[in-house]
Length: 81
Figure 1 (cartoon, rainbow, N blue to C red):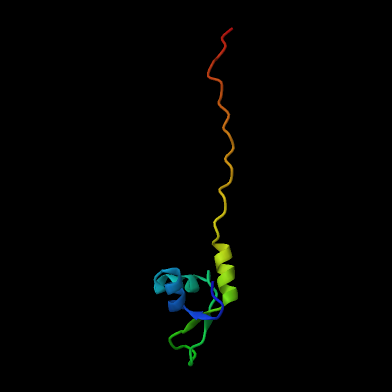
Figure 2 (cartoon, rainbow, N blue to C red; figure 1 turned 90 degrees about the horizontal axis):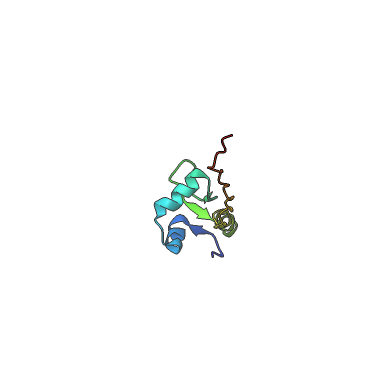
């Protein structure tokens, strides 16, 4: 989807999502990003690499639901002797 590092805002536009959502993924560690800000401890300027995006997308890929086991019905007939 991406072929060069992009900012959180650019990725949000590509995904048609809010920048706050992308920043939340970065904050929780779900999406790896690099801080390219000029001063340490300042306002972060995040860049997402194509490799980080590929790993993130693969981790969120849909998987088929597990098959449910059939439940066996208990016999409701009781035998009295």
